[in-house]
Length: 368
Image (cartoon, rainbow, N blue to C red; front, side, top):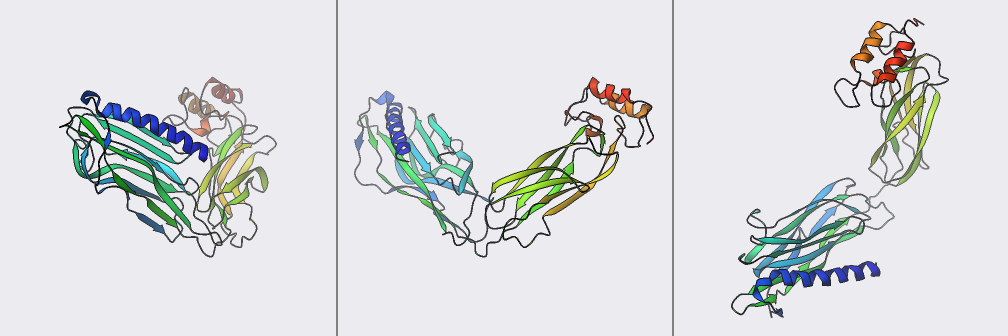
């Protein structure tokens, strides 16, 4: 953290020098401080609180400059805690010509507009260019949206998160004396409080399972997706297994899933060794220690037919209608109108000559 602050301080010194030179390039500026002033740079709203589970929810705050006189440029850095908050998006409100609630008048020069979602910082710097008029009054510098990625559970303490204005510099020109002036101001951080959830429980679930195909040629593969969720109040690591009837197809591990989140897992079903016939697909989230509600740990999908290679319509025989169906979709790719997973015999997300040949090679087989 000390190294990060040192780097950030070096960058701020560098950008401060650039800002000053850009602000008053045509004025032969010398910066001098101004005494007094009641200008405030603040986070609005100043406080946001969540008493219920807010994991996954988003909120937006505005950074405003209030009661400023002769503003001609600014340089600011906002910091946040990445353990609990994830950056989503931001909107600069410069210039006021374009944003009625914004700040600075055209022409303006964007010096810095940089988000580092890993360290949790947003750095913004803008300067007016002569002959832009100075800005007076109050306005929004930028808005920024966050998503709550973790809320503590008792006995963990409440999370008291500061949206910290790590650095803030504002400048104005003194046109009468051709001397630039720094604008003294105070800063007001914002606070987000995530109250630790009470009565935390352990509860994992499978909420959906889907097969990419309803028919699969024996010996070929199909993709199955399962949605796993953490309904409890703790971060969980658990296994999910997908079955064809009672035979396990594959098991995957979900690592460190935060409470209130979900993930989609993709499984590959190789039908080699499976007899031809109808199979019911299901997925199971293995219970975690302390879990008592296991009713939602299992999910069952519809039927999938393992059949003859080339039997794309599932009538248990390979005839000219199967060959024509694959040939009609020839050249199509996943997501295109003519594409159908059942016609993609080798399951490579495209229908090419190898799919047509696979069906044609087994022409006349069946019924079985």
